[in-house]
Length: 369
Image 1 (tube, rainbow, N blue to C red):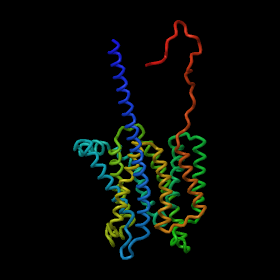
Image 2 (cartoon, rainbow, N blue to C red; image 1 turned 45 degrees about the vertical axis):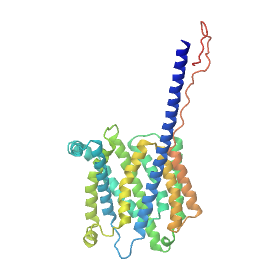
Image 3 (cartoon, helix red, strand yellow; image 1 turned 45 degrees about the horizontal axis):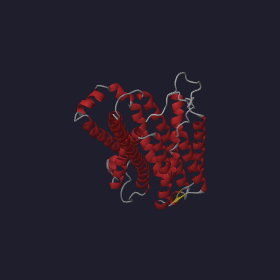
């Protein structure tokens, strides 16, 4: 009996060691996933903004500037194609069956997402306009106003309650954005005359409008899809399909003459195509990152992207940041972390380690060997 018990103890110890090593490996893999997610998120945020700014401000004089409306249309088309490829693999090749069930047989669902589809299309056009007239670092900081607009629309449309710390962070965010705007920091070649100052105002208005559309569309999208069991990829297909037609309508309502003159793909080169592809994949990357990690990764990714954008624009784009800009950007990053950091848990009554009353009967040991 003693030998058998000893064998059982040895087996239990081996099982515990295997479980402990498996737990360590799981923890290590989770850390790797978080670091990879952080890298992809920062690379997408920084790369997209810098490439968009470069292609809008350093175009070849011998070539026409590509049309932002056509870029938005191609972006939605590529996003639709990526989602269809993923659905094909997930459904075992039954793409048309899935599209028939979730689009043709669910017209009301597609109609519901047409409102955010319209807003996202307008928002993407505004972002191209903003990066035509604003440097990448200023754009990154100002665009964080979408946190404020999202909070306002969440409070009004979803009756969401916010803590005192979150409201304080929103005040800090607004203060930081205002300081950045009045700082006058920018590229050397973009602050020389009155017309450039007017262009900066246009860029500021474009960012403010984009932040408003981002906040409203995000909250509206959450409101209509709350409790939905539709997969992420199907939902993006439902969103991209009306966006393609809305973007096409925008091309021919706004840039019909330019398209007739230079063609739909006039001014496109390898860098412009890179911008379109990165922007198409960017929204999917953010969605996947938030789904498989947590919101903290997204918050720190946003903060890192602001810092890296400032450093890269200072080196490559001759960006001049004064003390006001540094203070304002710092306040925006602090507000971003404050707003999205988890709330402190309320303390619950802990179970006493020792019994309050003397137990009746013989005392039993609580140690488990």
